[in-house]
Amino acid sequence: MKDRVRSSLLAGAWAAVWIVAAGPAGAETFPHAALDSALARVLRDGRVDYGALARDHADLDRYLAACAAARPDEWPREAQIAFWVNAYNARVLDGVIRRPGLKSVLDVRKILGIPTLGFFREQRVTAGARRSLDDIEHRILRVRYAEPRVHFVLNCASVSCPVLPARALDPATLDGDLDAATRRFLADTTRNRIDPGGRLRLSAIFKWYAEDFEKAAGSVVAFVARYLPAGRTIPPGAKIEHLDYDWALNGSW
Image 1 (cartoon, helix red, strand yellow):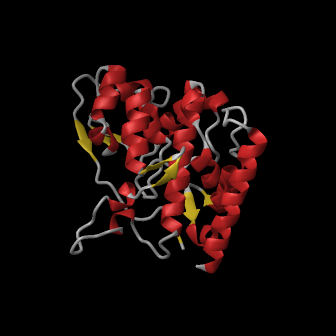
Image 2 (tube, rainbow, N blue to C red):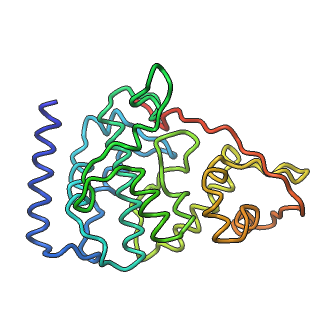
């Protein structure tokens, strides 16, 4: 605990230095390198070594301190989206390592043994205000930007989530990165399958956020068809089923 407090104090001091040095938090000056460094150390084939991250979280703490002080509202659209996705993913990593041995994010704040979404409702400072992960996803990313592909770069520390990006999203390559992540997710047969008879067995993400995909493409099926691997098609009248979602932790301690 003493190490965690010391690291947090150092991160806060680093954030203060960064604000003074950089002046107003412009998109061109916001540092993502600390998150890249943390991810490079602990991410392996889509799984997270939470034990290693818990033992050395200085880079993550520095990044979260910068996110807390950032003011992204005046940045270009791509920079804003990249910031909020990166901040969300960094917050999730932090939320897990603050609970050593956690087996599922749904175990946080269980009520009489019943899983809850308490993990996603914990408030911490991001961009100058106390916000929950739900606030970032549902009241910022989904409402402000109408960009359904962000669902495939947000990681909720669970097996069935889209794979955690290996690097922080970069505003300069955002569109291509979102496209690639969407195609990769749909091509992953552990998360989505198109049976020979045309039945679509899709991630529950396509059920929970159907409205987002319908707004973008007219229907969930039309959205999926845009991002299928080359040569794959969806037969007319294809029926959708949704796969069970595995909330087990996407890594090890």
